[in-house]
Length: 501
Ligand code: B12
Ligand code: SF4
Image 1 (cartoon, rainbow, N blue to C red):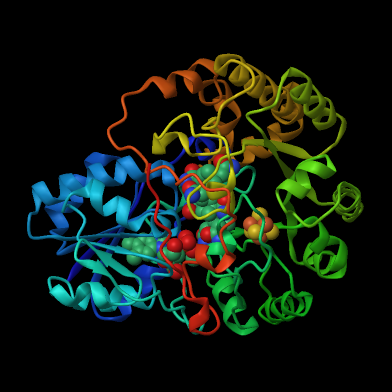
Image 2 (tube, rainbow, N blue to C red):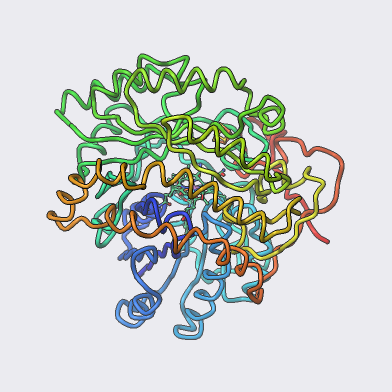
C-alpha cells in the first residue's frame, strides 16, 4: 500500500519559538514501513495544503493517516479528511494521536464518514494491523480502533520502546526544525509516560500513569544516528530514574556523541537527581524547561502539582548554579485581574529565567475537564491551544488579552530586547551564514503572533465544528476512567466517559 502520514499545521506558539519534527508520526511511519508498505510523511508545519493535494495526486496513496496530538488542529484535519475523500474516494482515511484518542467518537461524528477509523493510544503496534484490515467490517474489533460501527478493546501498549526508532529520513526539509538557538534541532524520546497526576494534564491519563524506558544502548544508538547538532528530548519528565540517565550518558560517551540538548523536567526531580543533570551538562545539556505552573501554594495544590513554592524556587537556584538556561511555565487563570498579572510581570522580570505564560485550559482527557465548574465560553477547537481563554474571564475578554500580551511582551523584551539581541547577534549571524534562519526569523515575529486584537478576533470566527462539552458533574472521575491505555488488570479497564450537553 502507498501510505501518506500527515502532521497538521503549526499552532500559535510554535510559530515563534520552535518547530519540531513529528516524532510520534515518524515512529508510526517506521512501524508501517517495517510491515512492507511504501510510506511518505508530510509535515504541514513546513509544507502547505497545496503540497498535500500534490501528494494525493502524485503519490496516489491508498491510505492517508492524520496526526491529532493537538485539539486546535481538529478542524483542519476534518477538512483535509473530507477533501481527501472527495479527491480519492477509495482512499482509507484514519487519524490518531494524543487529543484524538480522548474524543474519538466525537471526531467520527463530525467527519460523517470521511474518516474511516480513529486510532486511540500509541500507533506503532496497531497501525500495520489497521491497514491490513482496512475495508473489513471487523476493523472496529481491533484494540484501540474506533469506527462508526463501534469500538474495539482498550489499545495495546508498545511492549518495547526500542522497536521502531523514528523514521527521520522521511521528514523532508529537516533544517526547518528548531527551538530557539538550537537551530537546526532534531527530537528524540528516551522514556514514555508520567507517574504524576496533575489535574490539568493529560500526559498521565493517556499512558495510564505508566512509565517506560528505552534501553540505554538503543537510546544512544538513536541519538548517534541523528545528523543535527541539537536534540530536543520529548520525554514528559526527563531523568525520573537517574540511573537510566547515567546509563544512556555512558553509552553516548562510548560512541563519542556530542550534541546540545534541551529537555523538560519537574523541579523536584531536578532537586532529587541533581547529579544526573550535572553529568548531562558535561554531555551537552544546556537548556531545560521546568513546569513551575504557579507561584503560590494554593494554585499548586489546585493543579495537584505535589510540590511547594519553595521547592520550585530552590530548583531554579540549582539550575542557575549548574549553569543551565532555564525556561519556566506559569499558568494564567482566566480569573486573573490586573493585580495578578502585575505580580507575575514583576516576578518574571526579576528572575533570569525565560518565563512562559499559558492560559489554564480544560482539555478532554484531563481531570479538570470534568471538575472545573466554570462553563466553557467557546466550543471552538481552534481556541484550545493554551493561548486563548476558553473559560469566563474576570476582566472583559479584550482587557484580559491586553494584560496577557503585555505580560508576555515584557517577559519577551527581557530575552528578545535590544540588549539581549546584541548578545545573540553573533550567533544569529553565524547561523544565517550556514543558511539556518529559523532563529533569526523568530526574533522579529513576536508582535505579529502575540497580539491582543488577533487573539480577541479569533473568538469571532465562524465555528464549523463544535466541541462536545463535558457533562456537568460534581463527582471527581476515578483516575482509571480517564485512562486511554489500560495498565494492570482488567479492573483498570478505561470506561468511555459519556459526554454531552
Ligand atoms: C513534545 C511535545 C511538544 C512539542 C511538539 C513536538 C511535535 N513536533 O509534535 C512542543 C514543545 C512543540 C509542544 C508544544 C505544544 N504542546 Co505539547 N507536548 C509534547 C509532549 C510532551 C510529547 C509529545 C511527543 O512527542 N511524544 C512522543 C511521541 C512518540 O508520542 P506522540 O506524539 O503522542 O505519538 C504517539 C501517539 O500519539 C500516536 N500517534 C501520533 N500521531 C499519530 C497519527 C496516527 C495516524 C496514528 C495512528 C497514531 C498517532 O502514535 C505515536 C507513537 O506511539 C506531549 C505530552 C505527551 N506525553 O504526549 C505534549 C502535549 C501533546 N502538548 C500539549 C500542548 C498543550 C502543547 C502546546 C499547545 C503548549 C503551549 N504552551 O502552547 C504547544 C503547541 C504545539 C503546536 N502544535 O504548535 C498537550 C496537548 C493538549 C491538547 N489536548 O491539545 C500535551 C498532551 C501535553 C499536556 N498534557 O498538556 N509540545
Ligand atoms: S504536568 Fe508534568 S508532572 Fe504533571 S502529570 Fe503532566 S507530565 Fe506529569
